[in-house]
Image (cartoon, rainbow, N blue to C red; front, side, top):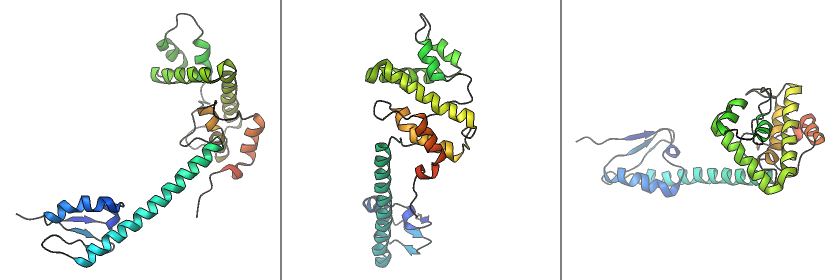
Length: 222
């Protein structure tokens, strides 16, 4: 019975974790299935056909990749923590639906006060899915629990401030939103996602983010 062979571009395509290298390769080594790395180049030995030079070099290369990944992960986590302290949430900013005639979150708040109206009917009226309605209803309830009507009104006001800026300046619509408006949304994302945890941004703050966007763009290491 012919044995197989595993060909990879480089040894780090197999794994970048030295702890996993032995777990992954041990069964192949026992079954005489070598790993061939094209870019290094090297061939890992098997039980019957050992290759001491490659078997020594492979873990070193994998460890180098692991160190690089770990360093980047540490930098990413530090950046997320620093951004969070400034009121910036990780990930994509909340969609404020500037193309909709009515801002849906504020409309949900209004419709929830209407007697005998169902969630399905509210979703139909705002033109969103029932899952969107349920998610926003929970968020509204969480905001009310954290700060009552005052916090909810402040939150809705901020949502509308950012949304109106997108509508008026016309640079934040669609997937190719202008960098200025993306910066505004990024800098206000923390408050919009969790208004109880961050200070409320003002129109002056929004104008500052928009006009001086280069100061607020994420800094990328060279």
